[in-house]
Image (spheres, rainbow, N blue to C red):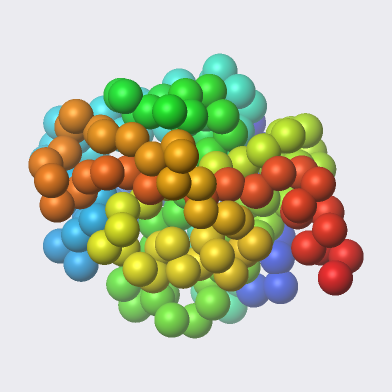
Length: 192
């Protein structure tokens, strides 16, 4: 992958490097983190997800980036907090296939510190400023209040008209609910 790197006040968002997959899955492939994401992944699911990240990056020049705290030495070898970034929506049955999608997954001990909001806000800015998105969506399920609460705090609006059933999951993880923000909405919110 290319050598993408973006810094916020406290975080580094960067492309994946050798060893990141092991650190990422060790920190995030837990029952608490994966509660709303289909459950803890086995070896095959982890390999498939890593392949999707690599393919996404190869096809679009961006994907979900590794997130590190600067205080941990994020510029060199800081601990992996998780990932955050952008991809093209591609879930089966999705009403937003092809749309730019923001997503994040942070390890449990990173929750409640504002890291997800800081990283996701940076991803939105990159999506609109660097990758020329017209609209960015984010996906979750109704039960995952922390996730859709963050979407709201980012200025995204609920788009119930775009909700869809994801055939990979049962009723506890359906429907997928959609939030979105347009480039114009983001610019207005960024100014105010």
